[in-house]
Image (cartoon, rainbow, N blue to C red):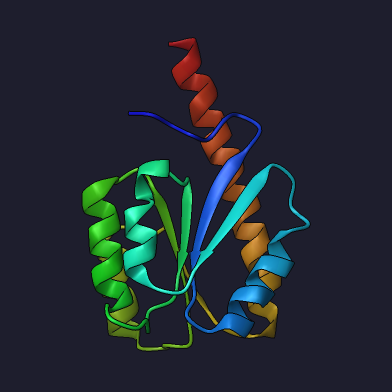
Length: 139
């Protein structure tokens, strides 16, 4: 599998149909080093580019033309190594449990504090990814 991520540069796909919220996500993450952020407003556009192997997908649940839940299932079917972080206003515990059963990495409820916490979640996840890459290289 061709991996476009290098040890020093990680691709993160963000799917958010609300332009303002997408811009806020981008602004909050641009301070982070070694990441490339690609924003999509619809699921179909993002799915067409999954061959670029992002390490992380940040997904909303309410999207035009496809539910976030269906999108997550498709991502997992195409590449189960992509970590999915859901950022949504949905607070339904049963839905969150279903998403966790699908293998999402984390679920964040949209709020002002969410963006700061999201940066920490991504930083921690990238440390794990880097560690796993080093282990694979040494094997």
